[in-house]
Amino acid sequence: MTTTETPILDFVLRNYTNFNARATRDALLAYWQHIAAGGKMFWAIAGAMSSARLGITLAPAIRAGLIHGLSVTGANLEESLFRLVAHEHYQDFPNYRYLRKEDDARILNERMRRVTDTSIPEDEAFRAVEKIIVPMWMDASRQGQRRFWHEYFYELVQAVGPELQSGPPQECWLLAAAQANLPVVVPGYEDSTFGNIFASYVKTGECQPSIVKSGIEYMAWFYDVYHTLSAGAGVGFFQIGGGIAGDFPICVVPSIKYDLQQPVQPWAYFCQISDSTTSYGSYSGATPNEKITWDKLTTETPMFVIESDATIVAPLILSALLECQQHPVAAHALIAAHR
Image (cartoon, rainbow, N blue to C red; front, top):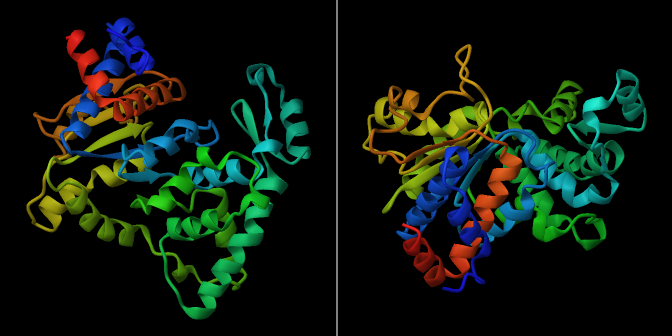
């Protein structure tokens, strides 16, 4: 059997047989089975995955119809845009583990903001975007317009022409999501660079806080989004990390059931990539079974936990899924041969 059409899928099926590797394989196969049956998939992304260039595989997956909605931190939202407008100005620090305090002080003075082993350039990223988005906020304040946080960024990223692009636009997941008009929730967006910048303009009276819809309004909107996504074969939940990016959207099921007292389909799939341990009530490290007690998942939900680095695992899964989407006949034959 030829595997030239699906080399990554073939590699996973041949080599990923035990431990976290097996969890990765099983999560991948269940994801594809769900999509092939007409299901949808919702992603929750914490951490600094945009700075780690997850967009290289996430953007094509969005365009291929493998992802149907997103919950992201404010940082991940804006950092996808930063990679588009300032990519060539980023600096990497492969030996970050050996940096001294004095080294980080030097990085600060060079107007770079380090994120583990890479750094965001303040002038080419933060300040360049600020020049575009602040007038949008001010105009909305004058006109009394109200929008969700991601809607401002959807408009902005689609207005960034080639002359302002520093990184490959095909690798910008925010641009792919905006072009597809994917439903996105950004819970706790205030905890981001542009959340802070927006707060400063509110403090000075130049912008009105009401121009950005609240997190409560995000959830009220997400009720209807979830009903739409979960129709038919249902919608799965694929989570990177933990925290509010994951906990906010997954709560929609029990909230519809108990708070709205309406019938609701449960999540049809669950996978989490995390290296967090279960301690001190950690949500990031909580096992999926705990979510059963909160009526977020059921005993029938396919559940997978991959205790690994998402920067390694997520691109691998997405690449294999893209192969499956592009060559479904070959993929199904190869999967059947490895059962």
